[in-house]
Length: 374
Figure 1 (cartoon, rainbow, N blue to C red):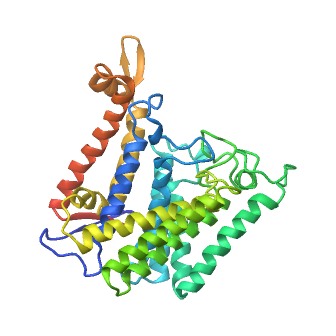
Figure 2: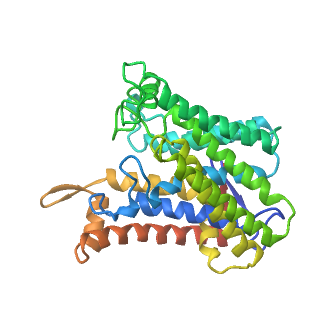
Figure 3: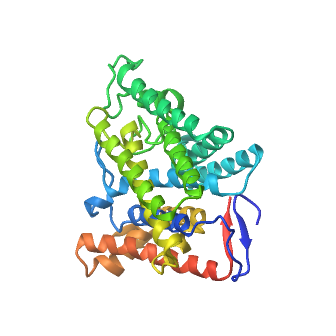
């Protein structure tokens, strides 16, 4: 298939490559399903608190989704076939292009197009982690992760902001926000306008998140007694999480700033979660619970892009009714759910219908052996 997607059609009975981990597909699938759940409420005015991002400092379960994606990208780098730097660069450009497509859809107003974004950051972190990890051992990678996290902490807390503000972590006046405006003014997130949660400076610690995934993937590949793998993985994950919580006391956990404490906290939780998935799905498998998650995980890029395009299309299409015009999404939500359910349950039900609907589509693709790659 031409374009950024490559659809591979495999016989349904084909077995996966020997190094493919069911647990990684399941973890990836659960993460992307969680993304669809939190990104598609029936009404943004009626969302349960755990399904919203933290307002600034702190975290909710929703704030775990993006770093889990980057962690998974790092793990995948160690398990996939070897690729040349040129192929990795092309793959990163494809992911970047898909991110810009999502940002531009459906108006394609390029003059105010948001340049940063989730897929854009994934593309940059993927390529950076690929290039850094190619020839470095575990100790060197751990040193780079430490350098990125300590360096970012120093930049954000010790360096005065060039516009006259003292070092601070407030929205819009911190150093990362100043860099956003200096490099991308007019092309930032429309909900903030003066800074972007996926800006250039905060991408540095996001690269560290991806490298933690690389280290986790290398560790999983080592031959060792499986019970030790479970014990060591959980302990390492809990240790990173604890370090993140300790650093939170002086450098608060903050997704929008992607603080160093946030990297350790979410990286530790991701490692613990993947370790449990590995034990349940790969060591003790087969695991029936993993099936739907694997279905999501093996076509993650397709459902990521398709769900974003559908949501923006439904919000953009206007339908004329007696009282005026309303977005098609609002009309459908009110007709199908909000007319008989309380506001928050109706909003959650719409999100769950999105998760279920895309699962049906992905299951059909899976049965036909169709998997989209970049």
